[in-house]
Structure formats: C-alpha cells, structure tokens
Image (tube, rainbow, N blue to C red; front, side, top):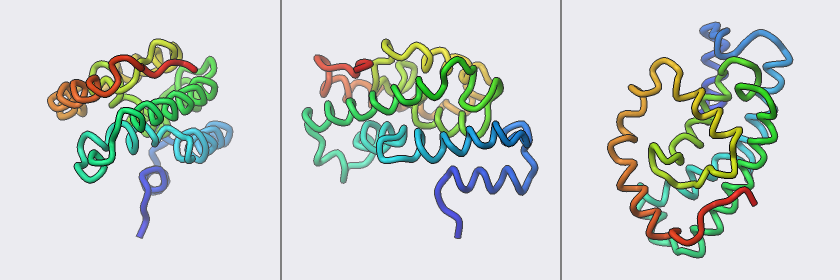
Length: 173
C-alpha cells in the first residue's frame, strides 16, 4: 500500500506519463525530489503549516491543546519553513523550473490555505517571492474551482486564528 501524497503523485505521474507535471529533464526532477525531501516533508518543512496551523481549527482533538503560546511557536516554525521556501524558489517562477510541477501543487496545498484569501493563518508580508509564486499558482486553470470549499469555511478559521494572534503575526524572522 502506497502512502504519503508526494509518493502517490510521483507514482501516478510515472504511471500515466504526466510529463507536464513531472518533466523528463533529470535536473528538474532532481530539484523536485530535493524540494519534496527537504523543504516540503522535513520536520521543519512546509507541512508544519497544515499540521500545526490549519489542523487545530478542523480537528477538535488537536484544538484542545492549542494555546496562544503554542500558536505563536508554530507560527515561528512556519516562518522558518517559508524562509527556506523563499531560498529554494530563488529567481525561478516555480519550485523546480519555469513551469508548475507536482512540487508546486504540493507546496501550494500547504501554503495556499494559509493566505489571506483563504484562512489567513500567516502574514506573508515578509515573503515576497512566496506571494508572487502564489499569484502565479492562482492563475492556473482550475484553481478557483478547486478552492471553492476552502473559500466557504476559510473565513471562520481566519476569525478564530485572529483571536489567537492579533498581536503577534508571523514575520520574516
């Protein structure tokens, strides 16, 4: 049984020959794998946005342990992950090359939910490359349709998150 979304998506890309999302270029694939094994999946990676900032608002078992102090700590961890993401992006339009790949869609699944348009969990003011990248991702075909659900429940999460962190937004360290 295959688990973990990066592994599943890479398997499907190979099986179905999704060359637009998983190009044959070995340098691009190498960058994708580097990103997925470090910036995305590591203990200090982008997954912290979902597991520590988003999950407490949709899982009561996690919410019970949420305090302002733990919220601020997790925002700092997310900021560190975004600093790493900014560095990895560099001057590229997308994570691994000048077109979106599976790595971008996985990264956006973590970062995009936290932006002001959805759940507003992070102040992206100190992350200009990430903001520009999110803007490019949001222009992709199907983006709006695929984010209808989060557009509906995001504002309630944003309101609850604001109560926890009004005085301490995540900054660029």
